[in-house]
Length: 347
Image (cartoon, rainbow, N blue to C red; front, side, top):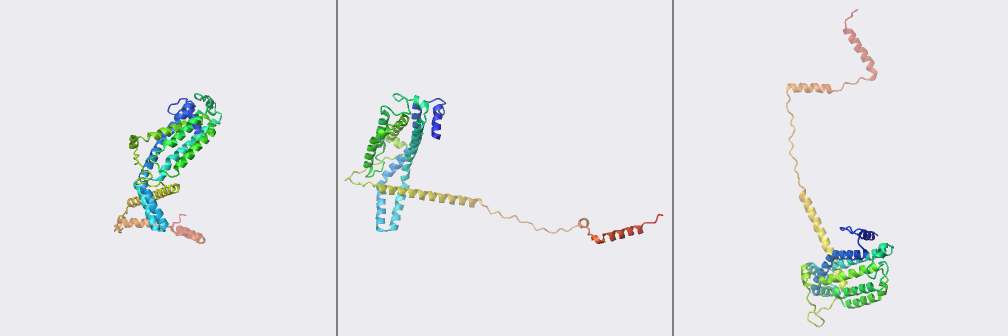
């Protein structure tokens, strides 16, 4: 719902321009913007795949050591071989998990846009029914001539065939079968895709077209050198010297597990180093403060005047003794008699 609200707001007033933008311009423009934002993930993914393809023979040899040690039941040798593979990937800045970042980000964006545009098409928005293009006047209705479904399907197939970097991608024996399966699915699903709203197929077509252009752009040697994507040497074919059989799906998954283990160990080591550094800084900040020497208080000799003043103060500070209640009357009468006896009789 929030993405749909953003799309409606951009349709009414495009950010930084503040102008009304028709849907047939807005959707391709936003698609281009999203593909530019995802381009950095694509570059990192291809660079990681290229480095992995370069060290693939050494990785496969290390995994063979792991399997041999496991078959012999030698746990120590198995751990040593695993450490060697992890060290190899760390030295070459390779991690199988990084190759999943771009597909996951691309899939998340595609699904978000898919459901957002499909929801807008079913919301009976008047502008969507009037701001079409060419032969498609109503963007909420399917393409009557199947031009958009066929184009989007063809671009998806072209991206599958030519978009992947064949030299850098780690191939498996099942890769060719998977490609055949994808081709069949794309053709079989064409009638189903033709029933989608035109605005959804327009987004799909533009997205596939930009994706194909970006993948071909990253195959240019100067572009690869600029982005730091290494060039992968040609792989020996079957029967040639240096040929190594590509790993199957299970072994490729095992390599991913090694990458996960490496990432966890690196994160744990970094956390331990950060904690040790923080502890060292705290210890440095703590300073031992020595207490200042306190001079002993020595009683000073008092003069006669000071002693007399102190004696008077002490007497004034003394509280008068209290007289018991039963003897108060007797004491007052005695005082009265003394006063009378001391006065002369004036009569």
